Image 1 (spheres, rainbow, N blue to C red):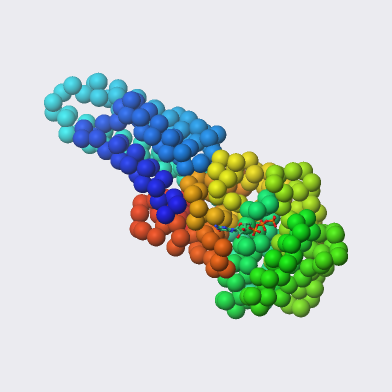
Image 2: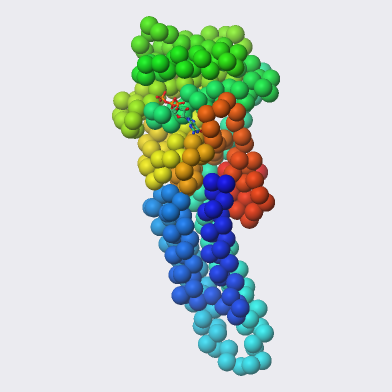
Length: 327
Ligand SMILES: Nc1nc2c(ncn2[C@@H]2O[C@H](COP(=O)(O)OP(=O)(O)OP(=O)(O)O)[C@@H](O)[C@H]2O)c(=O)[nH]1
């Protein structure tokens, strides 16, 4: 699906390094790197990240290729033909490996996804821009845990958008999940703290806190997130990102990541025209794994692997270990 197209393009590019002679020249490498660069940028992977990747690959393999070229010049002797071919083909594999490794390095989350623990309160704070899909995703997330037998509750600390509490309340009622919020209290920090305290006291295991958004990553929003985080001390802070934001995702993710301790990412709206590269950029910016992908307005969530990598493609391997930090 979403990233499969990008995966296909990357595989096609890498295949060009399998030449009949087995040799990889500087020109071929440049052409392959151009292909990969274009494919990544067209898929909305952050331009700066892509350029870093390209420069690193170049630096890592140039020496390899130059060595191969030198050796080749020396090996005029026909008797060395087989040996030369073997070595050349080895170089082609090493170049491929370098490209893949650089992609992995760039996109691999530094931290493991938070694993909620049974029998204790797990406070999960959702943050993100206005309209990213926090409230919708919270319903899906609550549904996911509730169905698996977790004692789940929701807190609405979004006092910014009129109707946010009603939206959460409606979802919670539909899912039969207890909720906490207020029509009169204007301080989101107070609501978050009181709601979380109440559910902790009542031994809820999964306490999900919704927060407000703004159209942009404004200082006021980020300060509010910091204050809420300080008040509820979340076990996990989930950044919800709208995949249709394309190249803007990286800067948004970076701003949130610098303000609060983002531990995981959920990407929404992958059912639309999003090309998916923004998701990869969010991983790079936050150094955090994507734990779920949202694709639709229904209250059900799919795991990333089921959703993105239905087919058993090479990119599945790439994606699993490099993008989503799966074991
Ligand atoms: N197509 C699609 N729409 C989605 C998805 N997730 C959320 N939406 C829609 O996006 C819009 C905004 O979603 P909300 O959940 O209200 O967003 P929010 O982040 O809570 O917004 P604020 O409370 O204003 O910060 C709604 O119309 C949702 O139905 C998704 O995965 N796919």
